[in-house]
Amino acid sequence: MILEMKHIKKSFDDLEVLKDINIGIKPGEIISIIGPSGSGKSTLLRCATGLETQDSGEIVYEDGAKFGLVFQNFNLFPHMSVLQNVMDAPVQVMKKDKETAKAEAMKWLDKMGLADRADAYPCQLSGGMQQRVAIARALAKDPDILFFDEPTSALDPELTGEVLKVIKSLADLHIAMVIVTHEMAFAKDISDEVIFMEKGVIVDRGTPDELFASDNPRTQEFLGRYNNI
Amino acid sequence: MTFATMLSTMSEGMLRTIGIFVITLVGSLPLGFVMYFMKKSKIKPISVITKVFIEIMRGTPLMLQLLVWYFGPYYLFGWGIGNWRFGAICVGFVLNYAAYFAEIYRGGIESIPRGQYEAAQILGYTKNQTFIRIILPQVVKIILPSITNEVITLVKDTSLAFTLAYQEVFSLAQQLSASQTSFMPFVIAGVFYFVANYLVSIGMTKVESAFDYYD
Image 1: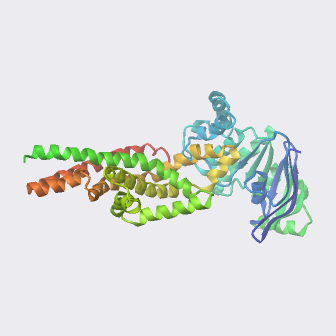
Image 2: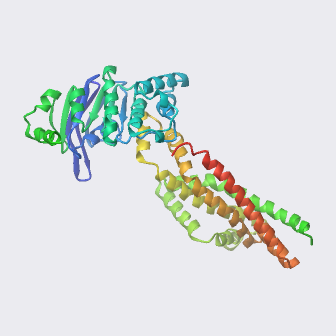
Image 3: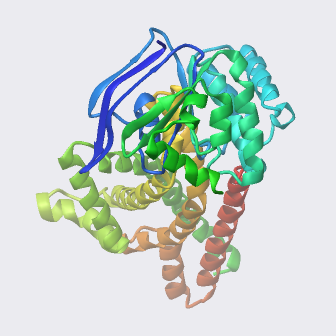
């Protein structure tokens, strides 16, 4: 296991957001977490990445495993160019030399289809492009596991597709991915396992085929809301 | 007295005014940072004292503060104040402006979204790296217009040194006007302040435009 989350509990004041969550992620595995707003999906990612501290339970990474996080709102650094956004952490944090970091950053930007926008600033790009820069920035730290916190929720519908497409293109890199998403077709298509969370508990889980054909009434009800659209 | 003589008499005052201006900026811009961090300190007495101090600096007239810094040591401790005039002016101006700058810095720093800190944390930046590489450059851009306002106010506020009978350009203008029964010294002083602020304005616009490369 590259990451094991055991018995994770987390409350904000009186509100129990996570109630005894257990998830293990194998190297290269792709897990989608679906569920209604307020079900604790994002909080789980924030605990896994250290942005929040769980009240109890254990989060264990394999030795030396590195993680990255792609935010809903991108959180690019507005004062840095696209290229600087991607190569700054490798240079400043990982102490890579500038030429190496630049070459690698350009490789990731190319994979994201943004090599020609390397000198642009985030404010000059569409939301979809900004999110692809953010993905390149996360990849530049050579993560073993990459978390996506609703990566397309802040995007206009017509920009969602381009971001989902590049996330899908990462599957052959054998980086484990945990994706919180409301894009059901995407989750079904890309995942090894789909987890359905509601009110802080894992209600249902399985392969996409199992989960999307689940006879659990709550799963059916949740998925039904999407099918009606 | 000819216009040329007036001008040369007042030019010494102009130099003193510029002196107050430069010393105040050089002292208060960094000290404002120190005050901001003291106010944010986790050590309660430091943060409370700093907070009260900033409120007093901003809540009372600078003219009054200058008098307190000048005469305070004598009334409180019985110290002689013979050579303390310029010292009191420097202390008064630097502390007062530092308090304003501390609040401007606070406003700027607090306006940076939390997501910037979170992104930096995830990418592995240390706290210092985050502040220096991510937060500070964005803060500078945000606060520059407020800083410009303060600097322009400072140019005019230097005339408050007149309260302590310091011979800067405003004091000299008044003395000359009285002794020469002429209006000209006030015109000279007015033009001096205006030109000084015009230069400040041009300079700050240049600095601000250096940060125009992003929104």
